[in-house]
Image 1 (cartoon, helix red, strand yellow):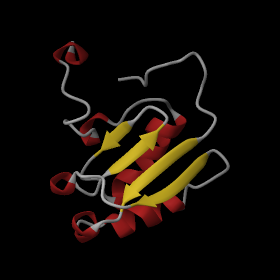
Image 2 (cartoon, one colour):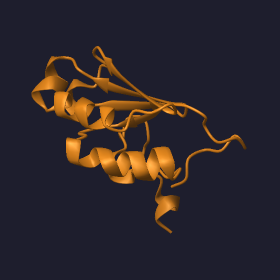
Image 3 (cartoon, helix red, strand yellow):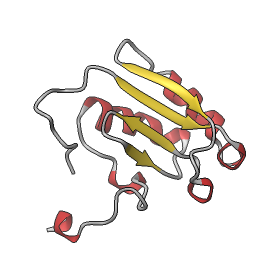
Length: 108
């Protein structure tokens, strides 16, 4: 699934990683550290307080686009960076279903 296009590529990305209790227990510290390895002039990494998705953590939100990823591990980070931030394609198996419900048309 391609990212929604406004006709202009994003110049800067903001990646927010939840660091509240539930997400921390799930490994968000390692997720944040993995994302920080990719921080650049176009990718800003920030830790966040609770995003309200405690049962699906660690949670990552990427702007622009308001893309929510759930159950993210440090091992997922290089793929999210390459596929989403550099390639413009969402990482479907990590999309949070509450914000990105399954669309059967996408499977055709």
